[in-house]
Amino acid sequence: MNLSRNLVVTKNRLSRFFPLRTKDERKELDWDSILGIVIGEVYRKELAVPDLSAFEALSAAEFKQRIDDASFWSTLKTMYFDTKDILQIAPEFLLFRSNEAEDNKHNQRIGEMFVQLMGGQTLLNFTPMRLNFIEQVLFEVLEKNGLKAKIIKKHGKVAEQSFLPFMTQCFKQDLAFLGTKPRYLLDNFQSFLRLYGFLYTSQLAHNLINWSQGEPKPCENYLILDTEKASAERHYLKDAGYKQLYKHVHRIFPYLTMSEMLQADHEEIVPLWQLADGIRDCDSVTSHLNEFSHSFKAERNLTKAELVDKPEPIGALSQVLKLSSEQFKTGNKDKDDINSNFAKATLKHLCADFIQQRGAAGSVLVMNQDYLLLLTNLVIGPKESLRLNELIKGFNQRGVFFDKHSQAEIVQFYERIGNVERMSDSGDAVYVRKTV
Image (tube, rainbow, N blue to C red; front, side, top):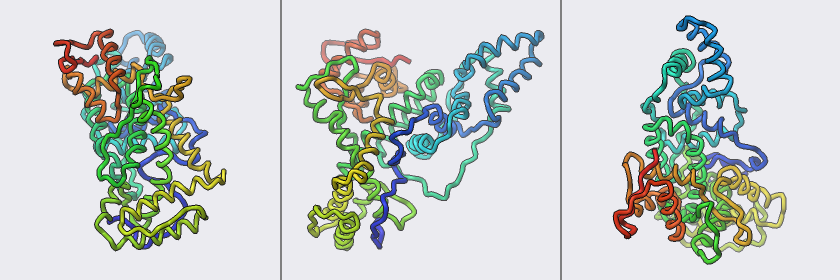
């Protein structure tokens, strides 16, 4: 059981399971920096040279030893360094882009979120790129003189458990597949991270509502293609789309900070659902949680909150979590804005690519064709093709849901690009091939 023996009301503090903080709304993300953090962990490498100019000097020296006409280097310099095409040779070169980016803590935290999604497993044996002679030399210079083994920094903090084990499993599986397609990985790595940033955020928000139901499962999260019309009659989209997400992200900060407060004297902070599982059959904690509710109400001056001592642990914990949200609904603008700004930052930084304003229909969750193709390829993975119904199940496993109308639009899109094969008129006999 991870519940603290001595429950004390303290300041709201968020340090686990989600990367954003209350002051991140006005900040901008640098996805190059985030990408570099993830690449460094995936390859367990870091730069051994200060910047791209230093690597350019190393490359110039190498080529001038190999070619008869030293002036040819200027042509290579124009081709690869002046145009920054050097960064497109292999994923490892993207470490230079990260090195040039501003190193802000919020970028670091988001990069660490993806590292946590790897579940502590780094993938060191990615399929090597197929390179021409010049690129191969540049890559060899990078490996020999431009990179070094990454130093694993020990912060004295216990490794964070996975809040969403199903998402961790999908992320690791999809990253392993991308590792077998290095050119595709290079072209889509940032999009891959943006996609999973949205998937993790939305599924975390939805599963916080189900904290008492055990290990999280994929929750309904309906999107449409960005080319579709958003009709008010499509109740899945209306009831389990953007409005649901907007509502649920407002629970991330209150619930996660309360979860940490309840585990304050433990070095290892477990996910909220695991905390609940640990106290489910422990009646002795009920009185402690009830007492904590009264203390929290008094400390936060929640005069309108009605408390009733609960007879069992889960009910008592539920009341505590309700208070954690009510502390930001007091009518005090300064306090209420804390959670409101946190939710805005969450939607802005991690969900913006998947939100569109659609006139009278309001905001809806959407997926453009590039993300759809990426997701399609990830779900099909090492196989050549999948039945449509299996593909849809793969979408659902990652937290992406489409209603029947959108599924029909998706099939039409697949047919236009030529990666679908109909064995019959039955939907079960539609096979979708990957495009990579």
